[in-house]
Length: 123
Image 1 (tube, rainbow, N blue to C red):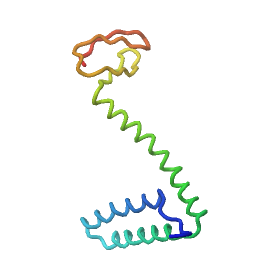
Image 2: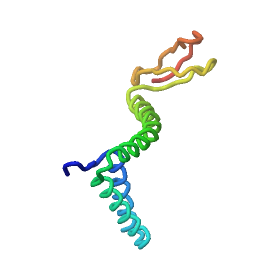
Image 3: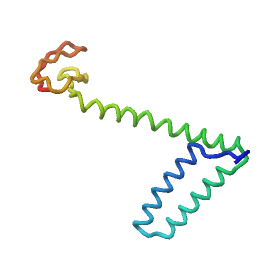
Image 4: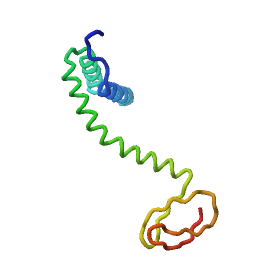
């Protein structure tokens, strides 16, 4: 592999996508899908054994630019789901501000930090 480009994020993504397509092709038994899977594997090998580092690097950077737009959104969603385990999220009835309250505290009076409105909720 001396002088070859090797595996990068784009190649790994293509291989993972190819594995999913292979499982799908086993279920629906499509010759077209099987051919497409083989084509993706060939593309991965061409990328890994390529000596044109600058072109492969450029392709990988373009891929990372687009994939990094998606990851922050999934990270925020993952964070919100993790917060739901330990906290209730309520909205203030007057200003609609989201307020995070710990679970298991019983019936409590909540004061909105934005508008100072008080309301009672069960945590």
